[in-house]
Length: 100
Image (cartoon, rainbow, N blue to C red; front, side, top):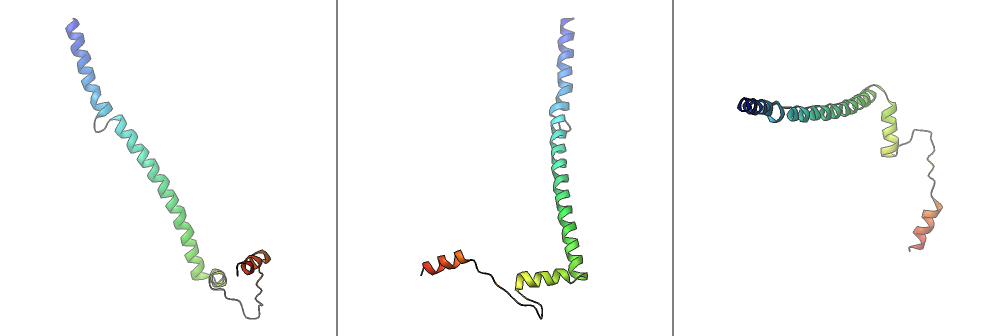
């Protein structure tokens, strides 16, 4: 009777081994679940970036506001009839003259 109990216990352990450590075991499933979660998060971030870029492209194709804004800030352009005013920081001017 004791021998049968030991054999059954060993067989139970052998049957449980693939469940815990095998190819489709709990640890593998848990790792794959973590990978799926992180991939979904990355996909959501990329989708949000794509939506933002898509709206920017649409705005550049259809509207003139974005083009005007880029021309003003990146190229320093002004409209006809506008006056360009540049305000200098006096602290920077003083430090530049004191270095000479």
